[in-house]
Length: 286
Image 1 (cartoon, rainbow, N blue to C red):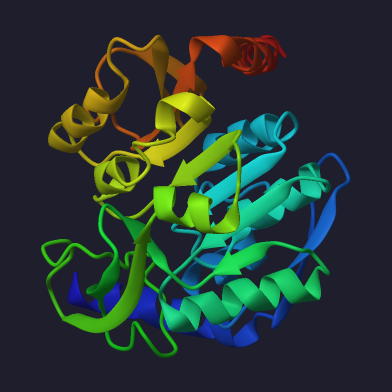
Image 2: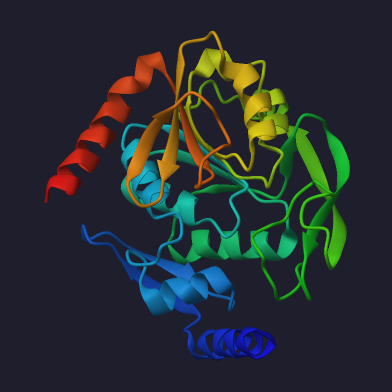
């Protein structure tokens, strides 16, 4: 087991070393964009396996792309290096896209991706939660705030505590951000903040039910799912688990599935979800 782990790490380093700094992406439907690669594991694997072939959040990406086509204002909360933000601009160039990433070394890559594609993503070096101020931000590994990127940075000290390191980051609420920037409505939101998605929603409580945005978010377990359910129960929202092999699966319970990404949709926008489900049915028939 020890030797297998060492071999895996060695192969990963060789692949990173051989990968180009700028990865040119061409999707199956002919869209093109670029990814800056600072030898992060995710970008390295995208280069070697191909963007469309790589298993990472495969159905989530497809679902996100289809939802972006109907959105004018899109938020990517916990954007990391910005892949979902880039997809939003690729598939809906006229949309206003806001990307939130508090970790400085990763934020630098987010900004770089925005620049090399000549996009106008509004990149925000700030975390969203239910309070405002300066808070400790945690990540793990040998050099998470330098040359590394585990994609697991969080305001939650109890998340991935082994070999943990910390920095301080600026934090605000989504409600406060919307008021300050005078954003009147949101159509589509992705939230991936490593176990604290409910705190982001709490900080959005003033506008959440007014905007009726479709929300794609990560839910790691049933306890977190129960917290999130409280924001939507009784307000005509439908829940779907995003199975990364088959697509959307209707569900009443959040956080108890093999795959941890979910979609939450208000009744007014269920037509978009039905279109996605029809696409998935057609794909199964082929």
